[in-house]
Image (cartoon, rainbow, N blue to C red; front, side, top):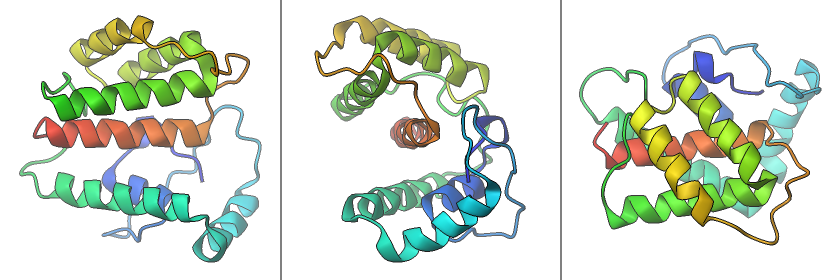
Length: 172
């Protein structure tokens, strides 16, 4: 099932990662633009993921679950923007470059700039964070970038994971 960032919450991210939700909140039926799969196909794929997942997928999902536990340990409710400004640490900077490089390889710099604007518009990023990420973007170039691609729902899920990790580093 695709995640609609306008309806994002921790239970929704758990559902996308395959972890069981802490509460029985209903999952959003919103779909990402360009996501043509039928909801029934999503349910079938969800069942397949639990048995025939590549090890990399399982490792990524475990990483998301660890980050969610860390985020839940913070006091107070999560407010938007989830990442108002980028944390100032070497670890955060490494994560930022890793994230932006991933996005650039997936769809090229122009698509990444559009995605960052979108993330700011839906409250994943604050103005300061979006501005700082745009400032990093010109320094990331890779001949392997596939500028002919568009970012898909899985790429946005990965972005949300990076936002969560950076927010955790920022103490949010």
